[in-house]
Structures are given as C-alpha cells and as structure tokens.
Image 1 (cartoon, rainbow, N blue to C red):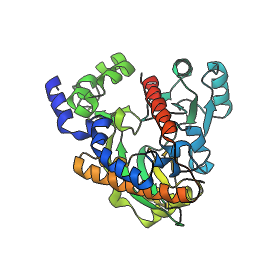
Image 2 (tube, helix red, strand yellow):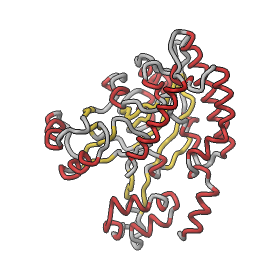
Image 3 (tube, rainbow, N blue to C red):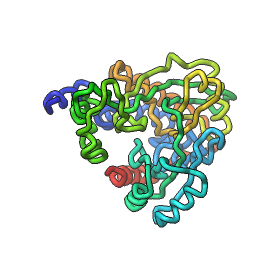
Length: 346
C-alpha cells in the first residue's frame, strides 16, 4: 500500500488518530465533571486502593497484590539494577520456563512488554529496561478480552459496562507473498512496519503457506496493532457474577478494566480457565469504543457515560473520607507520565 493511501486511511479511520486528537474535544465534558466534583483530579478517589486512583504511575505489582492469586499468572518483581544472571536464576527457581513475559512495573499501552524466548533475550531486556520490571509465566490461553467493571461504593454488587475482544495482529499466507508483502497489504499491520522490521529482520522475506497464520504481535494492545471488537452484547449474568466475585475481593477498587486471557467464553462466564493479566483503574479506557464499526460521536458518548460513573463514584468516596489529588500533585503525575512514556518507547 503506497504512502498516500496509508495516510488517507489513517485520516479517515479515527481509531488511528493520536490520543490527544480524540480526547481534547472532550475537555469541556471533563471540565463539567470536575466542576461537579470540585476538582480537576477527582479520579484519585475512584479507587482508594490504587495510587492516583489507577489513573497513571501505579505499580503493576501493587495491583497484582490486590487480586486473589488464583486469578493471576505467577509474577515476580525485579529491581531495575538487578544482575541478569541473578534475575534469571530466580525466575527458573520459581518454575517459570521459557518463553515468559517481561514487562515494566509501571507502564502503559503495552510499551516495553516482550515475550522472552531465551537467556540472551532476557539479558538484552534487563540491560534495556529503564525501570523496575516484572516477569510472568506465559499463559497458554490464546483469546483476550477487556471487561469494564463499575461498582458504586454503596452497592453490594457491580456491573459490566462493556466488553472488547482483542484480535492479535497477524497475517495469513497465500503461498506466494513474503511476510513483508502481506504486512504491507493491510493498513493495520503496515502502520506497525518499522517495529516489525526491527523485531523480525530477514524473517520477513519468508513465504507463508496458503492459509498459514502468523501472529506478529501476541499482545492485545491497540497501539501495537491489535483489532478491537465490541462484544458487549455478550454481557450476561454468569459473567457479571464471576467478575463481581473477583473485584469485590479487591479492597478499594470500584472502577476499571480487567484484561483477561481465556480459553473459551462459556468457561470464562463459569469462572474457569482464565487469567487476569492486567487491571487498569481510573485511567483505563472503555476500549470497546475502538471497534471500527463505531463512529467517533458514538465513542464520545460512551466515554462521557463512563466519566459520569467515574465522577459519581469519586464523589461518593470523597464523602466517605477519601481524598482528591491537589492541583500540584496532579500536575506532577502528568509530568511523570509523559517522561515515562518517552522512556518506554524503543
């Protein structure tokens, strides 16, 4: 696909627009809820059990410690200055074998998340990482959803407000085209070309067999090429009970998105064969908005709906004695977030 067509595709498909372009027009909506809550940084009270309410700059390990252990992968925390040999020894001593997942302890949008296949890759990762990091056992399940959960502080049970299915970035062979040619045929993968070339190198000259599928990026991150599909119509009582059972055990958690790897949807609803790989608090997007079938105006309405719930929960928790961030603290958090994003991009 030539560059002009690629640029036009990005312009005419809002899901590829930069974050600021999507959200800046909604500034008046945020201002409205800020006036209602009497603070620009009211979100801090939404999840009292999370730093900054889970908006940003929160330790992932801290979140994993909130979740009942039976619902998360085995996870180890490492200091950024740890020696690679010592770190690998600890990983193997805990029964975590290759391949495993390494990720920054404080991260965003899957930046810095990598599948580690051998000792050499791990040494490179430890040498690169600018922050403390985690190692997780690889979960065998191949499907991923993001489930948005909301519970008012005065209610016993919460509800699911949206579900997104995440299709990992992949290509399918035709028996003739190289992997590079297949990548360039689809705008979704073409947008990731520079990163894919860096990762796969000469491998992209290989030709896949007819109908052979190759997963380019095994992570459900929109910024790394995953396609988001709104499957909110699948919300049902069994699933809500399963998710509510987990979230109600997390002290100080009322609002956010659970990213879950699972085997099949029916088993997930029954509370079987799944693992929570991430929980995003106040900063978690209702990512089902990024389904290509949705218009930008629909997405804005959905964001506003969730901000309304975020505001209501924050006000209720403020009345119960929890605090908002001061303006100084909020500015410092935003500055730290920007610096972290620059560090993690590579």
